[in-house]
Length: 391
Image (cartoon, rainbow, N blue to C red):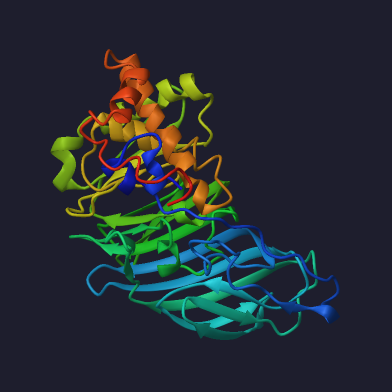
């Protein structure tokens, strides 16, 4: 879990242990036949986030259809979740906070939906046998929440001056779609977002279609490579959009808030340069597209490595682009199974910054480490407060 929030404030290699982290695991394995079905687990036993994620199944694909009106901040959503039962299930949990559940089905048949805190419990008409692939559909609506963490940082569905941005690390994704919201359960995504004509809706992966009807435009995005739910994003606004192809042959989609346009004139070139350098340094880029979203969120205080298109709260400097794109390798492609190991994501991404500086006529990586070790770097305060993976 490589949050830009902490990477900007505390960018030392080991200091990223300050990033919220904890342990976790897969859902419990259970008995086989439907006659011995049991309820799925609420949470996966994660030490810092015990209620995140759910036991008993593995999600294969999310198909999300969203309709959002910035003026009223009203979201209508349909989530179709394809999953495989790890054990025979009489019921199972999804993570969802706020929003009204209008109806739910499992394999096309009505399912009972119950709410308890951030848990949505679906009870299908018939128990799900172990090994069975099933589809759960949830229709919901309301005003999505913005969450404030203990560090006062905001996540979830965040309103902007002309739209919204959905930022999920570590718990925010459950504010805009129901799911198994733990990094141990990655899945493919199809996200369709309908917004008023004149707005742009950006998400992960590749834009597969765009159509306008009755003065509303639908953008259809596809992510075929597995993705943790905290990396899923939607950004809605009156963006200036540029498409390009990097020197590595990757399609790149760049969306920039007009307020930040003057400071982000070279964002396409920055992404291209960094992808080329990081591919040479770390190996082939792990996804089928790249890009960036440059929003305008004064006071947010962090960027986030949302898969294929990092989100920046303002026009970024080169070091931040290096950091967030490094996460495409470290954190996004290779994702720790437990939250406490997210310091590894941040450590590698911060180390990438050091290597970039060394390769571009700055301090050597060794010198940067020494500066952090002895506390002479401007951003070294507090990095030895506790050890990695033990916040």
